[in-house]
Image (cartoon, helix red, strand yellow):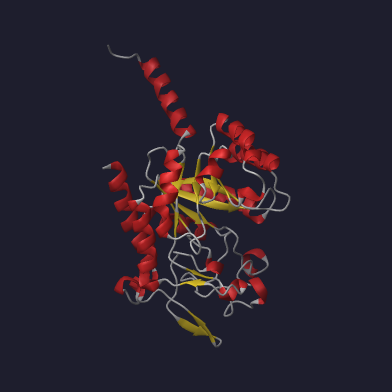
Length: 333
């Protein structure tokens, strides 16, 4: 029997509500960690983050790669719009925005990121960082605030287990009742389950390689958790932090191997570390060719998948589009 227009509208509202509560369930989502914390003197009064650890921009920056668009400000509407356009073209569905508490520069820039993302039909999640004084209680308050103020429904909690997993259980029950999905940064499904999280992600591509994804996702599935392992092109933070451990890019082979492992593990989501964390050298954002600036050497993407010159600048974004398509084909096919 045909449904009335009123009943159809009501059914549509119910379905929309269900999708909002569980936006990732079976969705083959590709998410990318995004950092809105860069600044320039002309736009922000200082080289925010580019000058980390005593570096003196513009030629001497706290990164081993140099961005193709130059040193940019994350407060620039045109920069944000072009970045969201790149992410959408690369097959990313969700932008996971680094957030360091209310009133911070990342908090103030969040509305502009959300507006630009929605223009490109991207959803926005928030990466709840270990900001000063963060507790389980104020994490709940902050998540509910971000839900109310900006409509954010998905949260990734970095380093949640500075406290016992059980301390998160009641908090996550509260958040789930409000229609929020919360991921814990951990490879341990037992801890995420005990904490009442919706799922887990790994983030750290230096420590948690693709060889561990099958086990992590199998254990997550056994506990009915969403598995969102993190893939990345490599890791190199020597100039920014002095960290001596490096995960080489191997001309794209590192990125391919991590993606291949995530797809084979039948991940529910794939999270990318990262779109633009230049300090740790995990970025897939377009980079300038290898060069020397005031005597300092910068790496480039030349050689990745055999590409050179202009084509190499966006090599990792283009490869992301390739893997995103394969990932969706597997889970939706």
